[in-house]
Image (cartoon, rainbow, N blue to C red; front, side, top):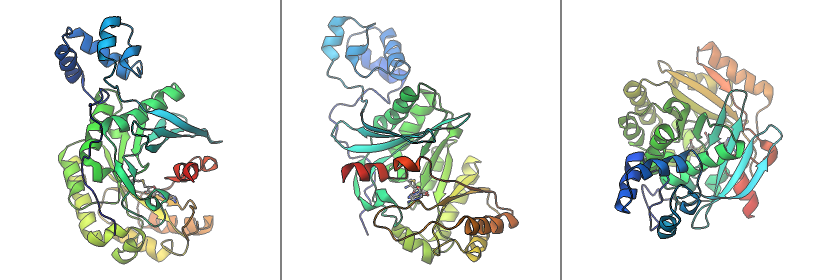
Length: 350
Ligand code: SAH
């Protein structure tokens, strides 16, 4: 299996300002010999006005802007933008070092959800996932995660209400940076923690570590199979993490945070969509405060899976409902623009 690299690998020499709190920005301006109130101005320009560079901040003197113009705010460039018929917009964003990541803006009646990436690529190598096919490049820094939300907010000209960590990468492999980004999205951009979902295949010990941060974010576990044997075939990293241990850690998360668990289950025809497997899934989740999201497979290149028929999907749902498991079927948004996980980037780069 591939090596899982955990934690920071900073490739950026100067820390960008995006991601810093009001207190940190105030300390920074004071270290530059400026009065404290400039910190508040800087904070407003970064988080509310969307300043892309210090040179844009016209309330600062020209002379001072000239002195600090090389300190980056840390915003990325839109490299490509694709609008789907359902209004979903997919972005390829170019980072400072030229790496490309995906972010998706998903508008619905009362919400604007952003699906963010947490890494460039992914080391988990899930067999049905386009990102997994491309391998791992690096972790994202907090500002590179926050930037995705600001970019979508500005492009839609509408406040982002929800954030899901379901783009490229495994958020719990980059836990510290993800937690910093969540704290900033909450405190500085005003998104409620309860409206932020962190999705993971599970890495031993990391769900517990997330719980200890005592955030109110929703944990979504990408389970995809009711048994260890089948799960290992779909999610190779599960080999080192028995499903019982994973579910124990999830129970811990529910106990510590008081939050309900989301379970993600991709539906692959003839692989994990049998009603018997639905019954096994129900028994794994018995006694749990959960909501199961069934995601019919979205075809990708180089993968030999099929999407189940609507009839088979319904049969699977029926078994779960009979077992009193809360369940929804979620179709990937914006299929017309190759929206599913990793697909837009894969298409653009080939
Ligand atoms: N690494 C994390 C975050 C990535 S989001 C995790 O695995 O949870 C991953 C989600 O994208 C998975 O839950 C899966 O449901 C979905 N996904 C990936 N590839 C898909 C595909 N080909 N079709 C439908 N959903 C897919």
